Image (tube, rainbow, N blue to C red):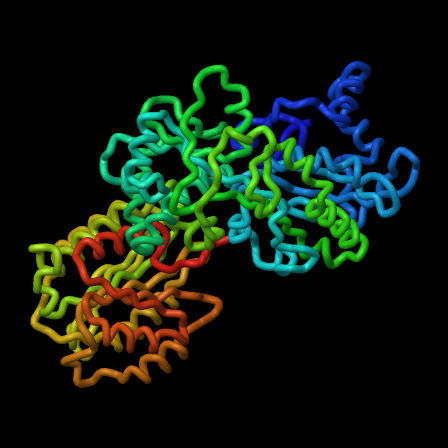
Length: 578
């Protein structure tokens, strides 16, 4: 049977790209015996029919009704459930299918494999009753309203887990362990020119890559914050070997593969040579969380909801343990490895990292894939005289540091992103405190040249800081220039407070006018980057709360560079786009 459109394939077949079958190398079991018997008499075309007649699996391409019914081998009626799942979890459902197909209220499973970020679109396109991705964080990419509310019929419950390890040669493992044996140690070594190379599966193709890359980024995020994490990824990704459609095992000395337990254990068991070194991470445990997500449409149908409940009960009960173990997966919250992994993988001693949030997932994708940097951003730069002062930690004036950051953002963004540039002070343009230097537009070659020239001309001027009026004007202009399908942002950089501007609105008026300008149909994320003004930053943060605006306080020049990298790699505080 050919693969379905997108990154999907029917369970039990083998495909290309990101969709790969996980082979545990164990006995074929009951289902395998049936398949072999059918092949002997009828070839592969008879497999699906044989499994369907046994009441175990069905073909959704022939059944699109909202409450489909099939017959088992005894002629009784079974509800058909269409389940989309990660390739690594499909063997679990195959093993459980015969138990579901027996007794009253029997359930006939149709299982389709779909990995990575192609899967949410397939949930929306196909007649899918439940989705079991290889990590909870994929939920952020699902369209609003597609999945059942959290907790409804078990929605959001983790049904299996697989820790992620660092796999490398002994010498490289010694270097990581000497640096602390942590994910943070790996990140520092990768970032600082150590010669160590990251091997990771394509983050768009599976949870292995996305959560594995995220674990490296999260270690930096936890220590130093979002901007530093974005900067670290910008340095690490060019040194990474991103593999497609296969496990990210190391192939050369100095490689550090990021490998989930379900894929690592069979390789360790089959290894006829010395096994590689396996590190769990002393600071955090990175883990895939296979998660149950029934669709909203399915739970709204009582007949389908009852069938879903039966499958969910089986997946979360003791009967699933054997099927999970055969697939080299752990039960949720299990501290024990699968049977084949005992004495082969290290004990997990550190707390598990939280599920990656939507903005964190965006960062991974934007760091790996330039075209994911979908930003429609207006950059607003303070040119008051205080910007001529040296930035702490640098001999350069702050305006020079900011100029360099703006240039880097323009260079990092793809052509289809849009960027505009303003400057502000006090009464720069008649009665206005702000001036649009370059209108917002796609980053064509002509627009890049215009921006480059304008950025080069930015200089500190003998003027005050009309911050509040500028914020309202920039926010309103960005709302009016809203572009669907992008993160729409305003980033205001200032080193001062609202001063030397006699006609300025008050902080209370700032809040009122922003609330009035807000349009839920055209959401704009407002971020104000304040350099070295704690008290004023706190006041401004309170003023921006009603529109979910954000104030970031910086104190050193290197933080400015990291902040601009953060802006380019997905926006300062953008939400995931579906």
